[in-house]
Amino acid sequence: MAPRSYGKLDRMRTAYSVETVRTAERELMARLPEGALMQRAAAGLAAACADLLGRVYGSRVVLLVGSGDNGGDALYAGARLARRGAGVTAVLLAPERAHAAGLAALRRAGGRVARAGESEALVEGADLVLDGIVGIGGKGGLRPDAVPLAAAAGRSRGAVVAVDLPSGVDADTGEVHGAAVQADLTVTFGTHKPGLLIDPAREYAGSVRLVDIGLELPAEPELEALQHEDVARLLPVPRAESDKYRRGVVGIAAGSARYPGAAVLAVSGALRGGAGAVRYVGPAGDAVIARFPETLVSDQGPKQAGRVQAWVVGPGAGDDAATVAEVLAADVPVLIDADGLRLADAEVVRGRRAPTLMTPHAGEAAALLGVERGEVEGGRLAAVRELARRYGATVLLKGSTTLVADSGGGAVRVNPTGTGWLATAGSGDVLSGLGGSLLAAGLSAVDAGSAGAYLHGLAGRLAAEGAPVGAHDVADAVPVAWRNVVG
Image 1 (cartoon, helix red, strand yellow):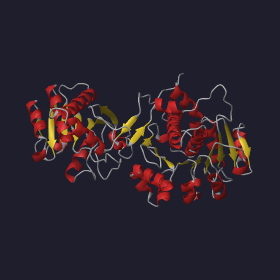
Image 2 (cartoon, rainbow, N blue to C red):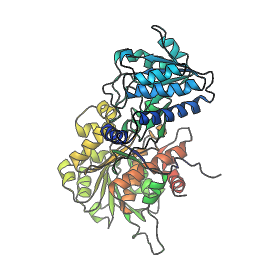
Image 3 (cartoon, rainbow, N blue to C red):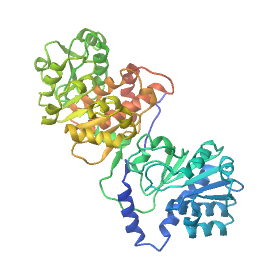
Image 4 (cartoon, helix red, strand yellow):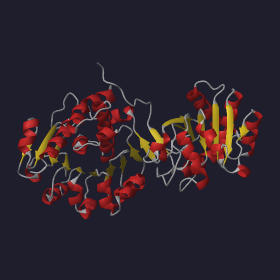
């Protein structure tokens, strides 16, 4: 049976900040007739709603209308649906500030405005709820008068569609402060916004449909989400004259008497990551050789292990600070994970001339930043950027949405392939070995982290297929994921 294919999209997804989007909108509106840009957005929005409904005629549609342009988009889209026979009712959160032209268009098309006291019941009984409460400029969560409507939308028997972004989430950061609308579909205009790609906000967006409205955006976005074709271009391919050393050798300094499995799993990821050979250094050599006899094993320390093109240090290392320090002194790229993050000297990391890739999960990132874990999980984009800045390193922040940030700034990479089934012991060790192997094969720290996370997430999906898996299953699925990407 052919392997299932995941995520084959034509091009990289990019996301831009609210300020950048607003600037592009103003520039475009200056060249268009008044109201033309909103009509483009409303046409795309109405088409998406019609697709979701299937049968528009006779359907019950409720618009949640705030005072901004999002409310105008919802009203014009509602007018289009009303002209096709839907029964459309608008719930106006600020009647005196509702978009006047949009409201007039809705009424001309046969739509109506909800009466006092009937709003929540209408929302709960709708076939489709269109969330136009707050636009991409909203900050600080929903206002109190909108919270009951968001709750009613959550109870609705119909689909909930967000206009540009679910109301109550932060477009720029992905943060969610308090109540927010939980959408089944978000129809976003011109470009993705960071909050649509980063948790926790991503979980509120549902599926995302991008409507092209003609924006001209700068070359460098805030976020990039690689797709199959992007990753395929990064992955190393051996040439006819390649040998195991020319393909790169990765060193794995991991494991301890207490955690020998971490060494085995890191090696399992490294062997499947594109390097030609794997050297293992540490006390778990017998366990590594028993499972992977092709590994080059040494117990003499990193300096005596032989030449490598990159090191992985930290998984299951316990309190072996000396080995971590020895690896960090090497003039080759180093991936630091798990115990290595705790044991690494920050000044040494900042002073390294060769690339460094740090791979913390939220708890480890919180410890490095001196904050609570919840602060990292609620503000993942800020956390990964701050870690990269503080340590002068590339940082891969693991989690529900894995982010990769470079110390030099630029676009942050967000991985779209992850699955909750990867939340299993040892999964991160496999990722460390995989990322380190890609470093040894010649990828930059940003590319190694991004491609490694992409393959790891895809392997997790392929291994799980909706059922629990162990870390060794994820490692075994990496070659299938690799073929899926390049095939």
